[in-house]
Length: 170
Image (cartoon, rainbow, N blue to C red):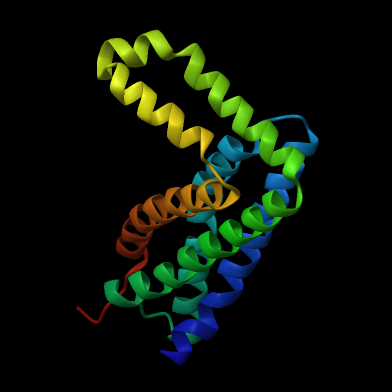
């Protein structure tokens, strides 16, 4: 397991740091950093997973890669990427209550502007529950949401990249 960790941690670490920096840059540009951070993750996760698996295959494993090894390396990369991003977002929002309040207000505004559609499709009770949950939202909720939405595409991209890069003796 040590060789997998040593080959992958830097890719997850660098990707996570880039993602946190992107969150800050999007905020400073006046854009919604939560949505753009997720979009940034959809673009960057496959890049870092590909680079990490390729690095492992070429420099650690003598140009050989099984599907299981690709999945292991990819899992370590996208999990670390998602974890660092979530922790960074949580820290930023915990210390910058103004930013958190802005994000919460934007989410409440979007929910309110879509009220008629939500009520017609899901009912008033569902809308009320959702509104109450958003009003009770804390910084950790945004960070956890970002973590989850980095893990899901991370798994998807890792499967595809592991299949493409695998090379066995068969």
